[in-house]
Every structure is written in C-alpha cells, then in structure tokens.
Image (cartoon, rainbow, N blue to C red; front, side, top):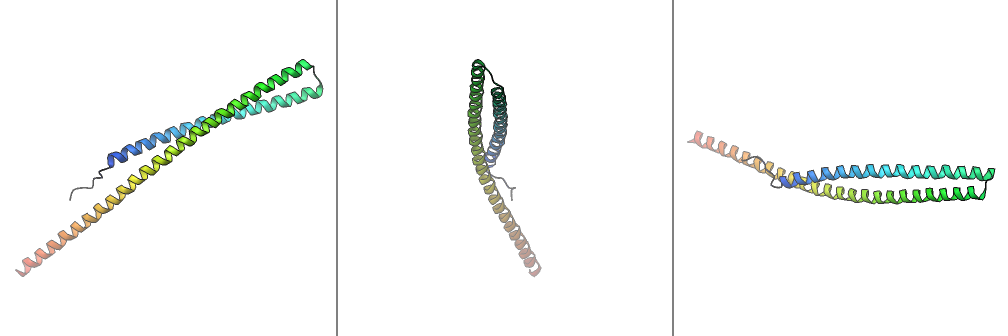
Length: 148
C-alpha cells in the first residue's frame, strides 16, 4: 500500500504560515499598545506633578498672570493626556481585531489538522486490514499447500 498522503497538506501549510504571520502581527500590536500605555502613563504623571506644583504655588500665593500661565499649561497637559488616551484606545481596538483574526485562523488550522488526523486514522485502519488480509491469504495458501 502506498504511504499516507494528505490531500489538503498544501492548504494546511498555507493556513499554518498565515497563522504564524498573524501571531507576529499580534505581537507587534501588543507591543504598540504597551508602548502607548507607557506614553499615556507618562502624560498622566506629568499632569499630576504639574497639578501638585500648581497647588503648592497657589498655597504660597502668586499673581494672576502666573495663575493664567499655570492654567494654560494644565490645559495643554490635559489635552496631551486625552490625545494619548485616544491613541491607546485605537491601539486596543487594533490589538483586539488582530486577536480575533488569530483566533479565527487557529480554528481553521485546527479543523484541517483534525481532518488530517481522521484521514490518517482511516489510512492506518485500511493498512491494518490489508495486512490482516494478506496474512489470512498467506495462512490459507500454506494450509492449502500443506493439504494439497
């Protein structure tokens, strides 16, 4: 009997390569998201430090011009924080979309792998039956030769 050959092997190989590439893309998306989280946290820390400095200066007393300057600086830092948060949300959406693609690709690959296992089991069973038949035929031939 000829050796086992899975007819969808090229499809399985393609799906596996696609899955591998999607995993690399998912890793990149996760890295971008982590980097953006660091940027957002940095912006949050800067705003918190600026607010603390502003409160300290207010307690010491300062002019209206200084107060306006601090408020303007505070607005700039708040805008930066909102911008970094918006970018982070975009990175999260990209990551989640890529994660969904990976999940789908894994399911497709596993389905084909399962089909391959089934086909391999069928092949092994057919091979076993062919071996049994051959042994039965040999035994029958020897009996006939011994009787004959």
